[in-house]
Image (cartoon, rainbow, N blue to C red; front, side, top):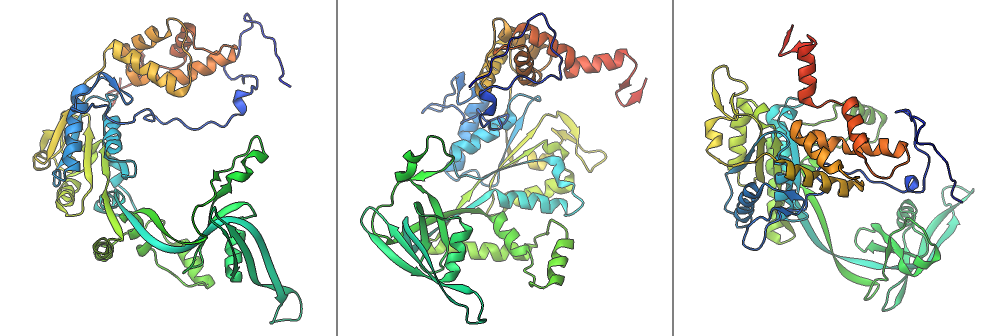
Amino acid sequence: MKATTTSSTSTPVAHNALPPPSAASTARSSRIAPHSHIKGLGLNAEGTAAPEGAGFIGQTNAREACGVVVDLIKSRKFSGRALLLVGAPGTGKTALALAVSHELGVKVPFCPMVGSEVYSTEVKKTEVLAEAFRRAIGLRIKETKEVYEGEVTELTPTESENPLSGYGKTVSHVIVGLKTVKGTKQLRLDPTIYEAILKEKIVVGDVIYVEANTGAVKRVGRSDAYASSYDLESETYVPLPKGDVHKRKELVQDVTLGDLDAANARPQGGQDIMSVMGSLMKSGRTEVTDKLRREVNKVVKGYVDQGVAEVIPGVVFIDEVHMLDVECFTYLNSLLESPMAPTVILATNRGNALVRGTTDVVSPHGIPVDLLDRCLIVKTDGYNREQIAKVVQLRANVEGLKLGPGVLERMAEEGERGSMRYALQLLAPASILAGLVGRNEIAVEDIGEMNELFLDAKTSASHLSADGGFNGGRMS
């Protein structure tokens, strides 16, 4: 039964008041990322960008340039180079990098980082860059295994007397019945496999597969024959497997070279208490040596030569690249020249700036000239009022918000006066304020009240200067 509440519009609502519970509030909500609406570059077959497409508004020149870069990457003619995105804050540099990753493929690794991340107290700066590059190189391992696959029709553990003591019983074996579209089969499995079955919480009606060589058990999901048993259930239903119960199946696993480095760099200690305590006392990050990386590369090359694995170069996106120092830029040059290197995309909002780590070297975008020569530079443009209004409407649709009459024009005005990011940040708080007074859409007065509660960067800076506050690094 749904409760009804009556409220008066003349009664003021406190900002910290909670809205009344509703049916929608009990639904499961997922976090909406800032660039969740970006699906690609939005180019047609000729490589021309439409004014609106794949989540983008405007930036046609930058999108077409990135499309050419994507073609270079796919044709394997972009090695040793990098893409540099330059433009003011909030003009879509991160969105363009993410769109390039989407255009390269769904399973292509995308490893974003900020230039200031290299300054760690645990590992060297060059090690942080090397880790990011290794995490952006994927490895798709394809292996054909003999498996027993089907829907569980019987799960019966057989107990016997414990031979070590006269008290209690132990599981001697387990009988598992599996069914497919083609037939059924009954398996007599080892008790250690029964422990894996209990760990996976497998019951009758689940679809599983058991590897014949290793005995590993994997629960695929619930058989769709049980889908009509409940109206609402958070369960994954899968169809009944086809073919025989005993079959050869190709298993695909996606990992990165960074995962392999970390797995081999972590020391495998003993099971005694001193080894366990020693592993707990050690630092969370382990520096990977170049020797270990060469050994991993040798193993990966062997897999590729055998046709078992496929290397998938991904995308490394370094935002605020001007925060790197001259040592990192030098190491970045060597990483670009390595035979196994991902696609590198850099972004900055600086003009002529001092190269970090030097005292007198001023370079465009704060990047040394030798690295700039390796980059294809793409500039992002600012947004006009019409484009800001379209971006606001797009984000409102993604977040499921309704805009009342005149709100879009007011938001576009705020974005042009302050910044587009400021206008987008007003959407969610304004929707909360509208919900407090019982409205399901954002009104113009909600935006006005948000301006009283929150300031944009330009207004905040002008207020601080007028009030005699902190200004430009000096107390006035």
